[in-house]
Image (cartoon, rainbow, N blue to C red):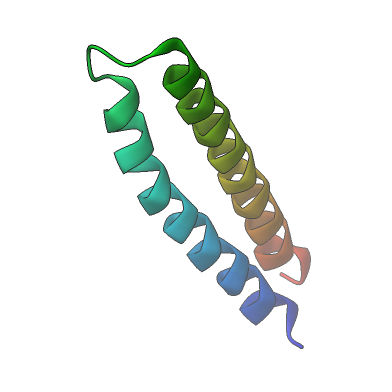
Length: 67
């Protein structure tokens, strides 16, 4: 597989993860969440954000790798 294409795939996946993160962050801002629900949403948001950052960094690296 071409590193450029591979990098593009990672960047597309990063954008998909970012899109999944937005509603979770909105839910976290709602008032009246229980402690357990708040913890669960926070953990999910953290995991999605870490995955987003990793995909973005990997995609950027792969795209720049063969220039």
